Length: 407
Picture 1 (cartoon, rainbow, N blue to C red):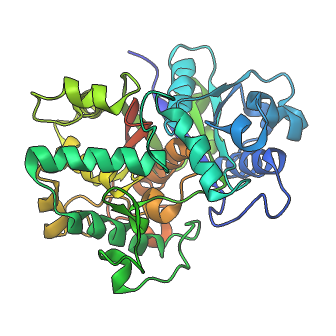
Picture 2: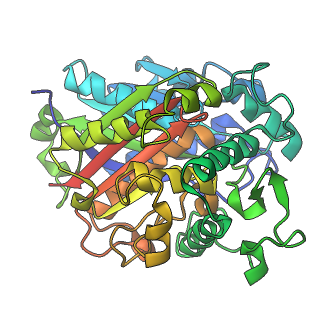
């Protein structure tokens, strides 16, 4: 059996902060995340054996690549510590966590620092949307779109509508819930934003169309920020009994699937499958199987990828909360609320919490770990012992899912 992987601690920046406006770059961001993560884990830089950095678009937004070298640049004690950057679009953070886990499970290293870093508010909104479009099949899809990703997830909504029927009011309800949850999260980008009832309706003034059938509040935010976690193995814990925290979070299971870039190719291949994105369903089931759980009812909550309301709508049935095409039932019943059957995105998710792309997968694991150890503060799910995550890149080209539990 591979060595167990434990989450010793973690840190998230304030996603409402505009780092570019403050004149700060990746050096200041990396420094804050490294120091905050190590402080929460009660470690010194010298305790770290290896570093994995999730970052999707560093060169496009800032011109800066080689971000594996940034931690040692700003924290001299990390000089010569092995490090690498991982890119998988919005799943970059999830892939960085997987790489760190593999190092620990293989016995190569005992203590891994995982960082997710992204700066996106360096350019205008239109230019940012263009940069983010690099995660699609460039020059082959979405060529008539002004905003690539709202366009693509509107197309996914159209496919759901064609197969099962889709009432856009259910997408609006997902948005309202995530913005509402974000108010209790002290790091959420939108925690201080003000909305009216019209903000979650088909109101062309208060909630204008962005692309297709998706409106403003259906979309996650352009965000600066970072998140970090420390992963350790059994040998490390045995050598450091002073670090024991009761309870301690552990990665119980994981799933990772990658398919082709084009959304149309994905939908064509799933035409005869009850799931619109069967590879996403299989990634979730892989995580369940490795965690030794039967289904979603063994979870106490989920942090899922809601880059758009449609991606969360799809996650609901792909997790098995409902049958295929029946996500609306969980929305109408209140199952997704904190206190409901299976709370989804109590942090506010990406729509309410913010979406610095390379950091999102790391932040999800951090929030899951906080939930199962009772450290989630005002958005704590009472009695949570197991949490699931789902992190996607592109139009679900890369899918990473985790199950995190408490010892």
